[in-house]
Image (cartoon, rainbow, N blue to C red; front, top):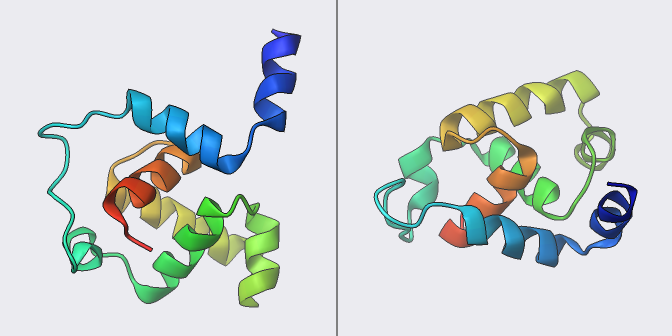
Length: 103
């Protein structure tokens, strides 16, 4: 377990997203991406900002500092993003966004 934990903590975000995409369903799970994908999922501009920073690997605290908002506000946005994309984790949201080119 410790070896797997260390390996995962040293992995790049690109590698983590690649691995998450390998496990993501590819048929029937979500609408096809388009130029207006954001509208399909109902993400606000601020939620897309937060999602972009999640994809960059920032923590909630780092996102709060970058966007000049509170940590609690970031947590609220993250919760809305997960619900709107119908995913359970930040990693899954990042993988979804990368696959559907949301940000």
